Image (tube, rainbow, N blue to C red; front, side):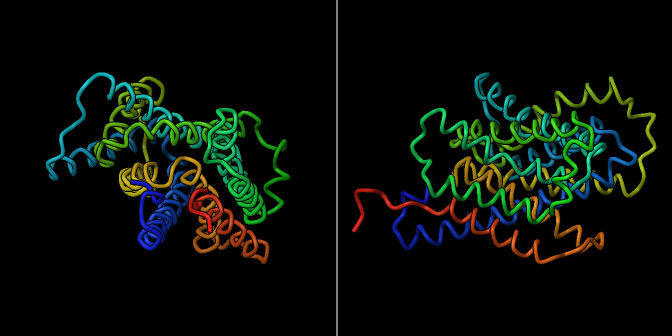
Length: 308
């Protein structure tokens, strides 16, 4: 179902609910930067991601089974879910986790706020109709807001940190953009089933990689690291993926990826609350710009035939 298919009154309330879910998803994923920083101290990236997607897939399948939902059937569906699992979880989770070992979290937040740019550019090259001046302006406004929220110091870090780590986080953003566009094909699959299938496929890739390269049985993770991975698995992955697959259908890939701006802003706010980082007027202005940008991207447009 799309907001354009609803009456004006119901359409507005529908969009408000979806934007509320986008805010919640952004908050949850914004917290993942802090959790990854905690976990990465004693748990290497491949093992962290393998545990994250494996726990999430088991939890999602258990909930789907309790609700009486059947798993997808057919090779084509599972092949599509395999691609989704790579693009949405296995690849970006690994790239971000490795990248945060070498770049500041603020710079990682800036670089990881770029999925809307990729979605917009891909959509423009494909000549997609839903992209107008307001959406382009909203994407630009949101990105500018991220720059202000994170602060100029993070931008100055470009070139002063490991270039490969910067490229890794940018690669994760491109992967997220492609995942949002690819995920539209699961509109007929219940969100929790699509999420569980994608996570299971990601686990099928990450578990052998972790065993081969990290030898997890030799690790000695801290208690904080284990709790951080559990939070990443249950809240930032299992719960978040269910919301994600719903929003892919209702808001579309460009509007959904605009939440990456909010995610970066929430990461800064959590740093202020839990790490005692500074909260300046630039943060306030940047947050306002982000909100306006997201509204510009997500707000439904009146059909041309209904004008007047």
